Image (tube, rainbow, N blue to C red; front, side, top):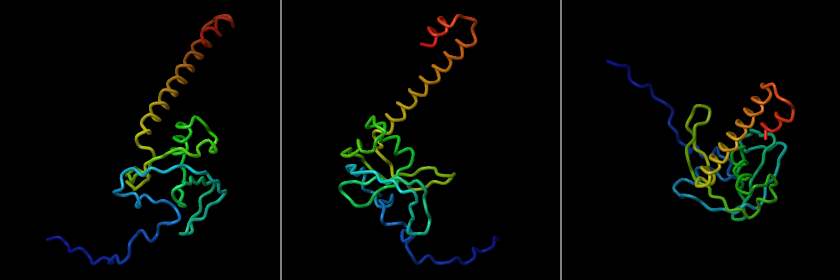
Length: 161
């Protein structure tokens, strides 16, 4: 016969009490589908302090016209905004419509809640990035090939073009 499971500690509180409510959280989006919001601005914080005491250096917060709550921009979301506006200047993002939704993702080997950002446009962003990466790879191969062949400088420049 196996040993009985030892008595555990009863959970008497909602884990969401540990979430910083000043930000849009993934849990707020559960069951709401895609929530359309309009970009208002991006703010930079050299060091952002969360209510739980943790800090984040070089934090970028994306604010919307419909709510005072921002989301923390990570590299992926930043890149999507650049891709959709063709601009690295956050001033140009004002007025852009984005869609937020709840999702799950793998983070550090664990499945965690996350905010999905413009899910319907994400695929086109991935395809565009793959195409640019492939073009860069081909260009490098051409340069390497040209540098490895005994040719005049003029011929080498023609191959690289």
